[in-house]
Length: 163
Image 1 (spheres, rainbow, N blue to C red):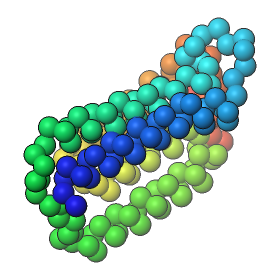
Image 2 (image 1 turned 30 degrees about the horizontal axis):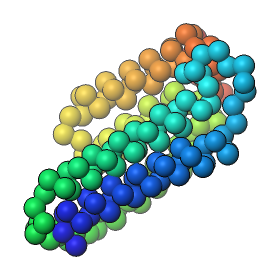
Image 3 (image 1 turned 90 degrees about the vertical axis):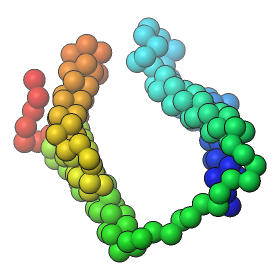
Image 4 (image 1 turned 135 degrees about the horizontal axis):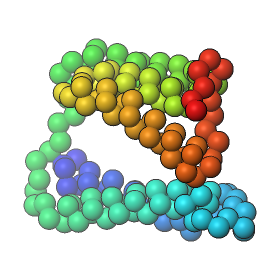
């Protein structure tokens, strides 16, 4: 399989999944109250937004595929250090499991901080200072917006509560 064929398949798959979500899954399985005044607070907003983004990414992959030459180079999927790749897979699985356990105990904000930082250092980011800043600032800003501006209750932990 060459790069062109892979991009075409991924683009078609992303478009198909996006269409399924938009026309079948979200209307049938996501419920929303009729009296939601702000569209951003509706339970339908983010599923539709993510589905449309997925469709746009799929179209972008298809457009890129059409611009590549028909006899593209074959893809090499050889991994130089297979042991390291397997350890990273195990590491991300552990991070996910620990995140599920920590979520109820320390809350959404702290768990997302720790999960992001652990994942950033697991994949050996080239920008560790930026990762630490983003890992701390983004969850706090999102908490401040949803808790204080949008009035949405963000799950807090048993040990540390944010104002």
